[in-house]
Length: 130
Image (cartoon, rainbow, N blue to C red; front, side, top):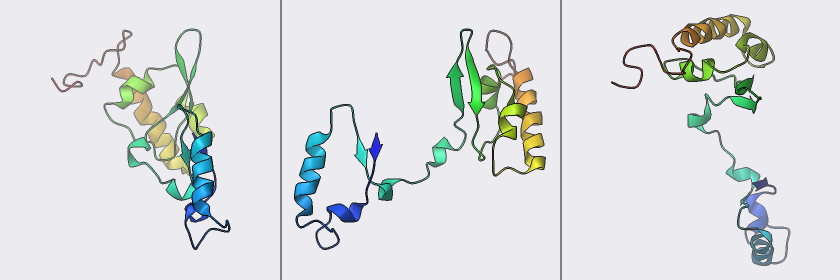
């Protein structure tokens, strides 16, 4: 995915280019089958991504690397909390979270980690909607 420029560059009347349609054709011609081009105007927050975490593969499993400041906790957290990694250390490096909220998240993370058994299946009844 390549993100560059503004939509105005490709619009007649607002582009600094004589013929923005040629610019668009050139850009579209350069794109490979597995590439996507976007302009900065197209970027927007994705509400469904508010709990996405960054993971790194290790020889044994996946390790937690980073969390967003929008992180929430709940039953689905137990799957992620069972991964390798110390949320306390990771969250200490996360900006835009108050110290009180960081401690709350660490406490809840540990709670949900305890809800998992070693096989990775939730111990809490009803976790999978049964």
